[in-house]
Length: 499
Image (cartoon, rainbow, N blue to C red; front, side, top):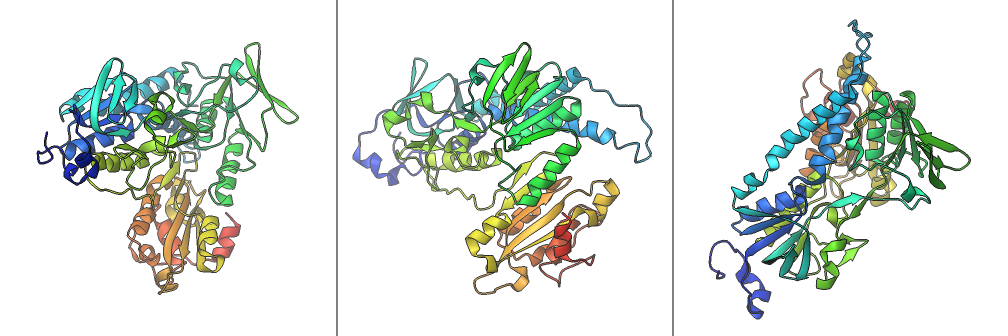
């Protein structure tokens, strides 16, 4: 293929290609990893006309999100939410028999949903787009060659998208104890009577609440003293109250001295007490899956195994890109998809940039926690205390929340003073945190406002359908911009004290 031929756009502008003789390439782009980032990268590169190979070590595409993460966990959480809601029916005047859990049916539903999602990621769907899917472990020979089994694949450029795996904490005795991770928890065929959870991040508390609602006695052990410490304090405090009220035992600020087996039980020795369980779930973060790729041999720089990239998803090697969780940034599926598209396009000769200025995230507990941008503490550290305003509007004053009996939570908006316009229009929206039913859906209005750099008053001026939960966002914004559509009177300081 010459530089002028279709299928390799931009090669004529690459000085490397002018200086060095070009070996025969089987592919323009080879993507290593068939999860969210890898699939998106392969499709993006193919869309640009490149000849693409997609290498995946497992016998199926989709990665952790489809089989071990987002899809199966939310399918489980959805049923747990339905079980919790069933208990509220009597209060609403609906007389029903006491609900009983069929865990086998729950697991079957979960498997069915995973299969439905996985059907969108079948090999033949990618083959139909001209992408060759190759199964096996990949290892770099040099910057233009990888070995997959005994097959050598030559490509002009590569995209590394091998994702992450559950991290194991350095706890004495843990290696001798059977434990589950976010990758194996869904292999359970029977509901455990008692569950121990190590780690109170998003995965840990989501699954802790779900299994508690199914009927397991759940104890969560966390070294930090507060939940969701990356959010403002009132967020973690509200979630903590909710979990404790539902019977989840929280051991916050505790270090695990030792893990051991006691017959059929698992024991965790903490500071001054021992907690026992039938199963142990370890949910203490993620580690990069790059050790077997041979990146050091070709000069790709890593940090704790995560691949270092720039705004174009380029690594330290000119023709090698990386995207998704393996880069060690925000370990979120939607970020992986965004980076995969950037890396795929650039590997095909384009010059796209990733834009992570506005990234919403959701913790799927009840009440749901959604956030975007800076929390109040971060905003004051970045912009200065005098250049930041934060307001909160409680869900107890949102009529839709009252009607649904879901008035726990709040909408919190953070704005910063504009350089020339000051506080005109209520200031520039730099962050939002929403706690409550449907928070993950509501946060995107705030994300869009930030994306287009709108002043906060636009949220107040926009007519919102009544009665919907979104009115809470409008009313929070009206406290920053009094000329908006304030439907209720109130004192923000007083409301914040009651959160």
